Length: 389
Ligand code: V47
Ligand code: SF4
Image (tube, rainbow, N blue to C red; front, side, top):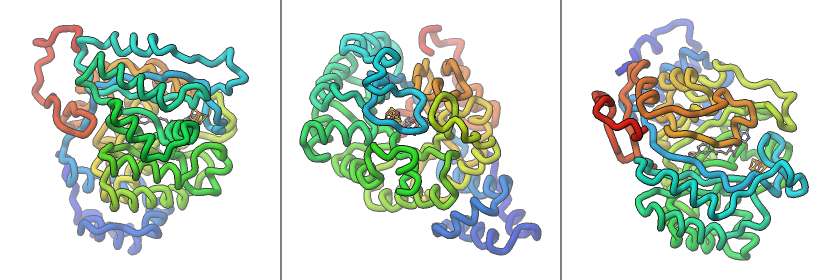
């Protein structure tokens, strides 16, 4: 346990009074305001925000680091939308560079994990004009027939808004149908940055901030938990990040339906925003830390290691992060095509466990809703069969 010495922060005469006042609030378990959040971004040095974030992280999650055994299915990269940061989608008219898996191909991916101890399948992709609500509902039903035990985390709010609009059903009806067919939860994608000034420049044609929030609120009311993301390090300013997190914090106060917050670092390869420099590792760590401090009602903050790389993921565990997503072969193309650190994101459970132990933390395999599946602190891998990774 890397317990923080609170007094060292409060007694440090080099820390300005306004930041110290924030530290006092955080150590007293009080919520910080929007203005204080912006101040942390403007003036909080890495060591300072890191200390606070680690305090919050250890109070909430002790020394645990969570991961899950999941696999990803991307049904298509054909997309009717044109997000400027996206390196992966192909418009319908550029079909030659696009792919669309048939239902059988998707189900074969699911079958290929038969006998493997995965607990979750994550299904997201481009917004294909011909793959509608009932197509996906029936697909999920078939996935569950193959693997009744698996948790289906599927479709961003962007995909869901389009499906419901095309099927002429309300968000509630659409989500109800998907739930009845076996969908268990929603991933956090499509949130980007909620603020209108940014959204209209980077993704003006897809679902609005209000629709994203309404879809997640509706899902929570139907008993489907979800995640939330934030695409940072592009053209947004600090105040837009805090505005984004504030809207999530308000919704979480009402529903308590979010499992985890996932900051996504903008990667600039092969998209219409390639002229924008990527954020530094220091800024990435500061961002994890300030997210952890600001989102006091989120239990978990996740670093998506295929996107930021293993080393930054390890560092992030001292800056507020307590979750490093999944193991298994992450074949997700949305990041590799945008220039992410990991061009072949593959880690066995043993490698992931080692990564966590190297930084003095306690690895726990979780299911989607953070029930413990296996405690890996003193786990003996030599007893396991080679296939179990
Ligand atoms: O919404 C697209 C992002 C998201 C780029 O819920 C990019 O467990 C950076 O949300 N640079 C989709 N990011 C993926 C997603 C996700 C990932 C892992 C886990 C979970 C979860 C959710 O990917 C999009 C967008 O914000 N994205 N292009 C890019 N160039
Ligand atoms: Fe389509 Fe998603 Fe890419 Fe936007 S980020 S263009 S919605 S695949």
